[in-house]
Image 1 (tube, rainbow, N blue to C red):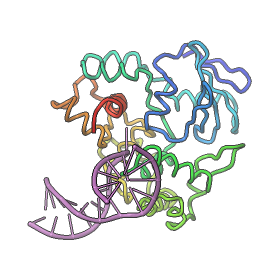
Image 2 (image 1 turned 45 degrees about the vertical axis):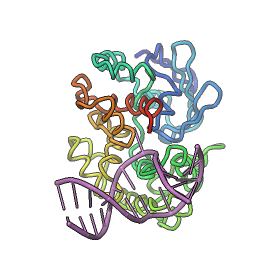
Image 3 (image 1 turned 60 degrees about the horizontal axis):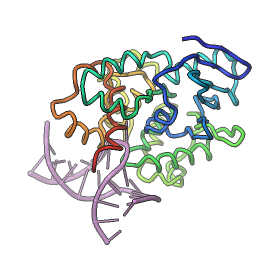
Image 4 (image 1 turned 90 degrees about the vertical axis):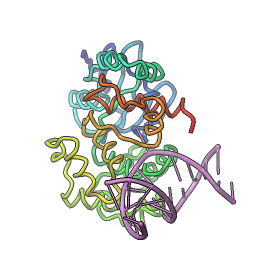
Length: 277
DNA sequence: TCCCAGGCTCTCT
DNA sequence: AGAGAGCATGGG
């Protein structure tokens, strides 16, 4: 992929199969917000603005340390620009139902988000709805995260190290407070290490994450898909269960094998807006 | 007032 | 092993 650096701007030439709205508002991330034609949010500790100019994707570094080469490489990975979605979509479209789901939102990409942030936000997602997840995650950032201009970064593990269960409860996260607390303790205590997950296959990684209280198969699968590049992970929430019952009664088609998680995002989004409860 | 949300834990069979 | 209640909170 051709990339150009202009001051604080990384320009990725001719990016296809990427829609900002569909990608940032499909329920995989909770802290990107639309501002005019662009989206502003954090990718790790970098605050940035993402937009399109013709076919080129523009990613402006608003705040954050590090040279632009490193920034451009990090963002390409975060935005999953190195994955060939044209090829994937063509393969998935061998199945008619998949084809329909893809046509509904052809610009979804699965982001590669930071592990710690994904772990905590998807613990909060449990038996919860997306608007309220956003509210709680924002409250965590506002309360404990580093202030960057008008924004707050998601708190680091160090910033949460000494935060208590009662403190989390004050942010209205309800019964999830004790689970967030346990996750922070296990990460800061070295019981859970991201590097370990890279060596594991899906099943081992899922069991590994399920050591954390409040993390079951669905939350573990989300973490593995959205922050560990385990693209064969297939998180099953209520919407996916509906979709499987009504759209894929015989199970997932073979053409998504190995990339079930990416297919899952198309299916999840399609189900949410097209299936009745 | 009841039902539901990117589910999981605990208890009872 | 499998089914079912309960769970914090807020929106519809």
